[in-house]
Length: 286
Image (tube, rainbow, N blue to C red; front, side, top):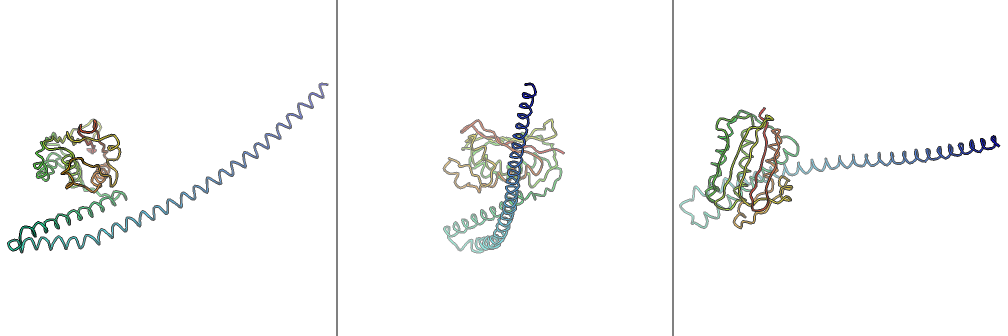
């Protein structure tokens, strides 16, 4: 009886081993099939990425060529408009002068758009080249404020600059000027008349300099903050007369690219609509 039980046990073990082998074979088969599917998917994805890169390069090439082709006649139109305004200043009536001024204004707007498209391509291709030099930040900010003085006076804004007069950091002066001009211009745009705009710069313990451009304007929702630095993203201003300041949706995207090229970070904070906005960014000091 013991022998019979032993044989039965051995038979069960043998059957279990056979089942295990069958399961292993089935598992190996499924693994091989899954591996093959994954390889096919990876190859398909690789080809799609190559095609997307090719299309992206074609897009950039098209934009670059189109921008060049458009900019040449724009320069001519701008030049002839200036010529007409100067040569016939005393011979043309007020209405014609206003028409020529409108042409000039729109040509300048298109030229700015062309320049921004070139900037975007540099950012997308990681080709921003910085010409760093020691720069007095306070002086740079004051120059930006001076350049925007007409818009500031037009809305009767109060501007406060809280930056050490002697603070010097190594940056691309022209690029950093772009950053402050864009941020201050936006603060002007999204703040109602008699508003307040603060530009603050402080050293931090991690060898970075933290800048803030703060206004007491219209504020932003959390959704708007999440979209703020995207390409072609425009936050609509409910202030009726702000339509003349309508932008391209590229300014903050370019601003972010410049800050990132310096090794810094940029972000926005706002308690909510009608509670003001603060744009913060860091620039490494070394």
